[in-house]
Image 1 (cartoon, rainbow, N blue to C red):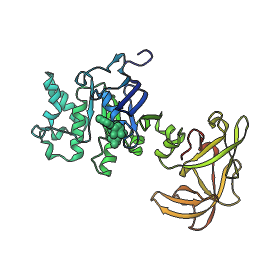
Image 2: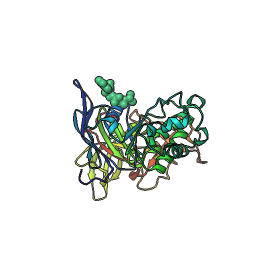
Image 3: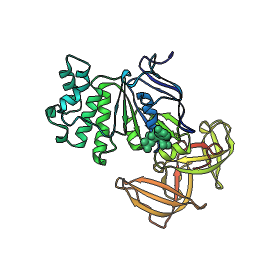
Image 4: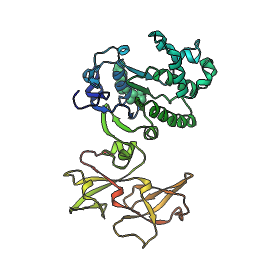
Length: 366
Ligand code: ATP
């Protein structure tokens, strides 16, 4: 396909319909060669179906899939240079670890299978267990063996379908860092499916957020978090406060808003074109509890009553009741700043550029 680098994975207008149900709805994606890409969304949104279509285990009902210039839409799974790592790692119990990793190479008659398999085991730091059987290893180690087996023949694309789902939280966090290191070391394209936003943000260069078969937004973790483009993305990628707002006036730099009778501003450039009814979004950690009378000029400010204080370790989370009946969530680092007491009235402030704005007429349900 013209305009794409030689090894980019490209999905063009890809859909998968089962009878009358559309599991994947007209997806366009360009996944750059050598990137760590995450498909993120809630259960049933179509992530696995998308992955299975790239693997060739499922046929799209519309659209094409290509790697670089090769259209692989009709290519048999075993003829695609695409491997998959699943949550259940499915190692051969009767083979030792080295033979598990070397299995595919030996089947294809690769002569120097041994150094290649050892190199893959070294990559996942398991060369010392080459002669052990899978049952002698922990779940996390078995998952790393499955990974070594999947990268040993240097596929164009490695698909990972919730590969860490069976691991406990601590091991999962370790493996996220480990997977990222391995991807950077081998430089292969990784496409990772997960419903865990923290996992996607920890590992991926680029995240595609999916909902109900559709792509919602594609971007780097920072942009998705700071500037979500829908209430779904805003709520799925961490906590957010969404306030109903109406545009009152726009100058070159600043848009003036009315938020439940309170004047606020946002940078004019952040306004969704033509919208007058908005959601004004602000992440909990961008809101500061400020002393009454010390508000800096230009801050958006609100007043409310503290209805809950939760200690989170590095930070404290406050719920603040707003005059219009909703609660705002505020998260403050525990860095020696005075804490607000339960039941006290506080002033809240944030820098207008730290907020994001959504078109409420397009996106009514926050
Ligand atoms: P999960 O994280 O729960 O696996 P997912 O985002 O990976 O979810 P998919 O497995 O892709 O979602 O499924 C998307 C939708 O398509 C689901 O509603 C599922 O029931 C439906 N679906 C998947 N495979 C089939 C099939 N063979 N026949 C009918 N419906 C299917």
